[in-house]
Image 1 (cartoon, rainbow, N blue to C red):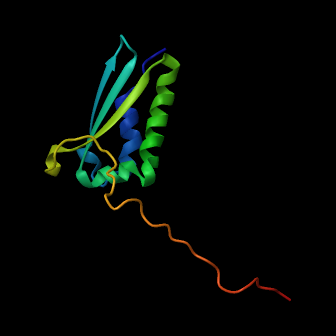
Image 2 (cartoon, rainbow, N blue to C red; image 1 turned 135 degrees about the vertical axis):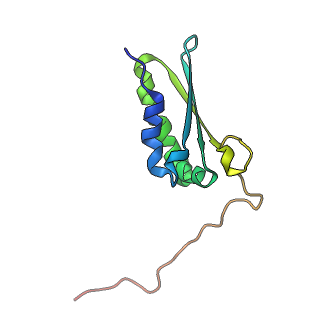
Image 3 (tube, helix red, strand yellow; image 1 turned 45 degrees about the vertical axis):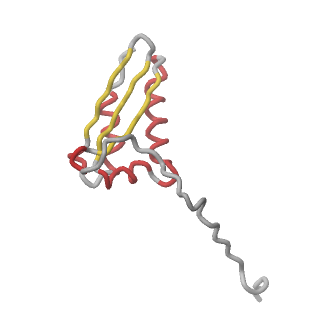
Length: 119
């Protein structure tokens, strides 16, 4: 079996989420001795949250597609996202920050009145 082109696959999956797709940088390292693939993305700071998605759904979907492509040849894929150097922020992996105030309050709604009857 041939090794998937991980760089092109990641670009194909990530570019629709980016405001500035030209600034996307992808680095891929394949370690044959332990069948691991490390993929690093560098994006603009404002695009990090769009790739992450609500609750990490976008990022989890991208990781699922990558692992599905790697599974026929018994590889595992690890994906990290960094802020681009041009974003004037430290280059650290994207991680969800926990609020010190605790979880957001749950908004509950209740209906007013009883059931509506139709004649």
